[in-house]
Image (cartoon, rainbow, N blue to C red; front, side, top):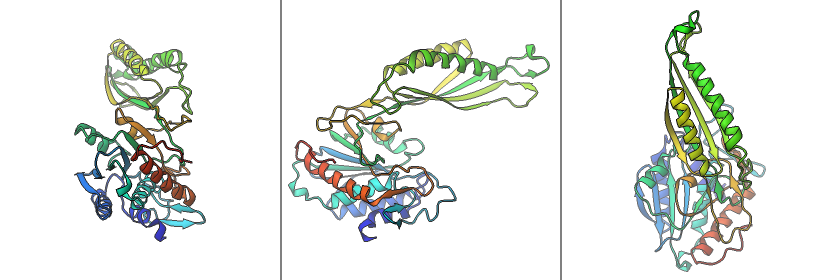
Length: 350
């Protein structure tokens, strides 16, 4: 397993909800310092660089989701046939390890431009690490690569995300005398029905066919209301999210929800507001995009690529990747470093 030493060490760290964030950050920092990198910024995030005028950056989040009890030895990298197993090996410690392995093979004296590496926290819950970098006005390089699992395909677009938390206030009464009360639950149901009709007629048909699911999706994730089965509910809370394919959908949805909120006396809180992106990158011929949300969506104005290992088994029991995919990713990262940092047209990402 010496070939996969970095991946093996990264999997050992329990970074569920960033539990061993300090330990994994220190491991990565010490490894890169030995290669000549310097530490630019360190909190629960880590930013390191090498060379002058960095033109390319890599970003990977160090946290993982929780594992299901059926997952055997989640913090131990194990091999079975041509696959590697371990918690986060796909999402996305495989991507981070490939970054470390790739830069270890680079002769930085042959590069015209420098390189920056970003290692973030809290991606699986709230994107806290990337939001911290953006808030601190981090100057990201022109090209950014995000190591989320893609089965070695280069993705240059991603859907947006709008999440709403909506509160409805009614008037409690006994269910036998409903006219004395106002049902917060029924107001929520009517609100959802009208919003669904608007979505079906105005948002869903307006497609962007570069996405596998080519339309903005709507999901009512949580409905929570009432205190007793025989009482008119005085309060109800709902959570709705839209994965958007076009920026203009946000304004359409915000306007409609604002009008419905007035009609049903609801209070609206926007929890997440991330715009979709679609890049034009000169050396990418085929447009492929991500349906899932990544940190790429939070960084503005860059030529962004999502590129990582496969098969895509993120958040699954016995998460795994193929050895061929991991080796291929290292070579893809090396090619990107040499050609982008030397301002050459890329010809070899296959």
